Amino acid sequence: MNVTETERQQLREAQARLVRALSRRGAEAPVGLDPSRLDLTAQLLAHKRERIVARAWPNLAAAMGPAAFRWRFDEYAQKHPLLQTGAQDDGMAFMRYLSATDVLPDAGRLEWLHARLRRTWFAIAYLRQSRKLAVGFRLPRGGRRIVQMRTRLSWRSAALSS
Amino acid sequence: MQPKESDIRCRLGLGIGWRPELALAIERRTELGFVEVVAENVPADGPVPPAIEQLMARGVKVVPHGVSLSLGGAEPVDPQRLERLGKLARRFGSPLVSEHIAFVRGGGIEAGHLLPVPRTRTALDVLVENVKVAMDALPVPLALENISMLFEWPDAEMDEVTFIGEALRRTGALLLLDLSNVHANARNLGWDAMRFLEALPLDRLAYVHMGGGVEEDGVYQDTHAHATPVEALQLLEALSARVQIPGAMLERDDHFPPEQELNRELDAIASAMVGRRQQQTQSAGERD
Image (cartoon, rainbow over all chains, first blue to last red; front, side):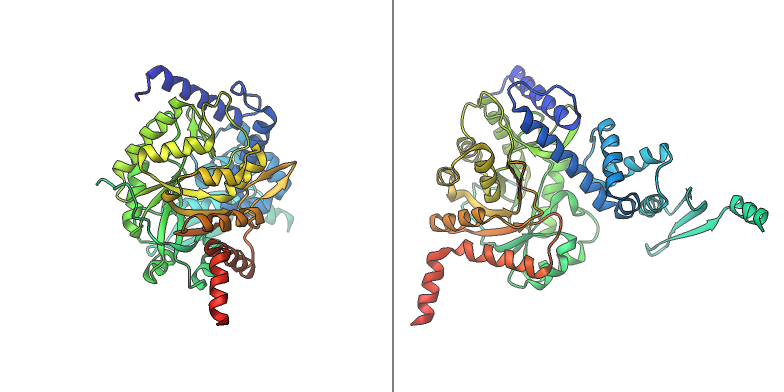
């Protein structure tokens, strides 16, 4: 019972069409599938993807609040289909997206920094809201430390106001 | 290493899906026979997570459950993912591993979800091919799980239970029977759950999944974030009258309940899996 290359290709295409239809609104669905059920599945998938990232990045989720998290994540998800499963990669990509439009809250940036320190021994991030520089280290025995320092900008404005 | 067509069905007992949020409750539930770990979420290298190590030390069996092999997909199985699954089985001394009759990616995109395979001869042949490759590479037996679906592909050449039965028969794989999925599909697609159960090759049953869900917008969603529906428990009890159930477990993935509630859910599964007849025998024995 050998599958011909044509048959395999047809299967491949049908499956690809379904995945595209489920991950991006407006993408054409395979013929003959119940559109309302497909739509519902797409919504459930989007919600699932969002929940996975929110659970893995709770400080980010809390800092944004559920409503903002949901609509910003939806915006991000529509533009970025899932190329690799995993809350880590998806969450980091989401944070890059938020950072690019300057809406990544400090709590999220700190969470990102903490995660970065799993793969590198030193990392820094600028916390825009509190205007501090967060400097992170991984210690020899594996612990992670983040120190927040006022930047010169803050000192100068503090000096001007006194 | 050729896994044999397994009539060596391991006695697993009562189990649960291991999740970090449930670690303490799981540790305290001393009569658990097995835990299932999501293969993609546990490390294949480095130290074994302490919680898992403790469970292994007290004799609890650990079953890696894969979600990313995409055995129903048109693409050949990724050898790296397969190797990883086998590595986990060896690392945890697992009696078997499990995966799904589903595909999870297409067109270079991850669906992030288990999607139904078209029920055609071609798709069945592709699935069988992938499963055989997987079984050849794995050091332990492989069980395949039936998934829930909100929609079906058009032009099906056979029904779901025939598709599953054929796949198992042609590959020699075991069955991971998700009764909540059977209930969900009965609800959402109008299938007859009992007839589904009766048509399955139950001699291949490795273990059972029980998970919760919720009715919303006229559709049953198996969220694994709610209590197990009574219909699924009834199916478990009906199943126990037809076959000796080697293992049955609770799946909970989100909105984790307090320990007491979790234990009540596990109690219900423990009770249903031995069935009413056995319970009656037991209590009759006690009365004498």
